[in-house]
Length: 638
Image 1 (cartoon, rainbow, N blue to C red):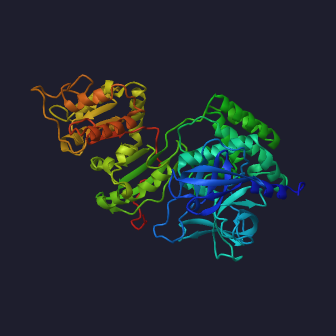
Image 2 (cartoon, one colour; image 1 turned 90 degrees about the horizontal axis):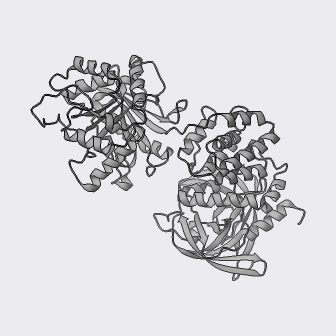
Image 3 (cartoon, rainbow, N blue to C red; image 1 turned 90 degrees about the vertical axis):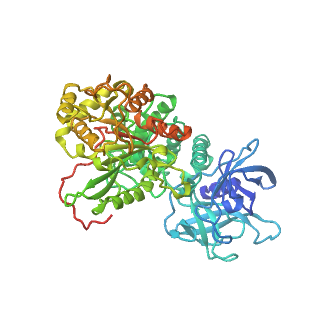
């Protein structure tokens, strides 16, 4: 067996295998130093649960350790039902970690009828003394099972009691591609189910990232498994033409990069060919982006997709980790004959870390302005704006708002999840500006989650986006805001006295620095509606007000003068807004407004500036795809 790479891998597979004594007796296997993977129904269903782990380092050397469950799938709602997807648990060895090998994981699901090897405990031959057991299986592909609530790997072959939680080795790639979950019928060769390795992403994201990065670092320094896997795979060529060794080194270098902002989904779509859909499995780490791109054999420029992504990561910083990744990219490119393309990409300016967002539009129907069409996009960069479904049919305002609320949670999940503050841009006409978007409750399980308190909720002026003639002044005022404090330039307007359209227009025309307004009431109110229309047409990109408020009461007998930074100093909303935004730049404004909304709730102050605070924040660089304004077919479905 010494010269047989598959035989050597099976020996290593057995050495990585452990016995887990938790909720039940089952199997597990080491995936990173000090971490093992098993089934949740074996280890336990909550983080913090204690288990006993037995590792047979050699045939006659048995060691017992205490382990702690760090992440686990929940139990089924009805006792006795099949455990829902993914039925996985991550266990960390307590105390000093033994010097053990680790399996090499693969997200690639084995093709139909591909041969597999499963490892686990079996009491078939010795009922009172379960032993390590290897079973020859084959894949029947992945199927969606309602009872398991997920896409499970279906297996042919003999799966015995005690094998749950054990690893499944692909004899084609030489990597572990799944975890044994259940037998179809005990004591038979009727096969069963396994969880594909991508199911690991359905556990706690922080635990997943910690474990998978430790896994990648281990295999960059310990090649015992990977060398045999390369031989099992034949020429050793991985997806996108990378060898196993190159892939391991790249993944290890990616695992060492410092944390950075940005959406993994946006990074994936920026590299993948146009029209590529996001993977069914959530992208939790840069590693996931790399492996998903590698599995698709893309055609970005003349570079493999995964290598192009590694280049982009390498040029985003100047740390030792970035330099190490760059070096490994260059070495792989030299062997693949794409050195010139890599050098060109490395010399480009660093990828601009532009904030991704969801842009939701409510547009009045051209056939009946009392009805509205709903459309949504994922903004991932100026050249990457992806439609999230089609435009709805013409709906009443109430129906349109309901459709928007129904669609948003899914898109927020794609862009990072509700717990990760992201930018939500509502592109709406003036009459919808007082809709209570920031207090929407979109997650029934967490009824206290308010949209504008979790996410950066901003409004944008639909009228301006549909009038190209207005764009020049809009861009100019936005650029003049620059990196200065918004509080320094914030000006109050109320529409009173001489503030008619002509006077306001003259004020804006003579002062291009008027870029941020504190409206003394809601733009839906008649007096403020005129102010809002002139401000939008004049290119003012930032406006603040308190939802539902009426025009402010006068604080003196003086008439309201022309807008400007020095006017209306005794108005309470303006004074408080200037103080709150004294050090806030225009780029920081959405986050600062979210903070003020939460401060108002925390302090329970009805007159706090954050109470019912609304922000129009209209960055002219963030555009949706242009389309001709023609009457929309009323029969288009939502």
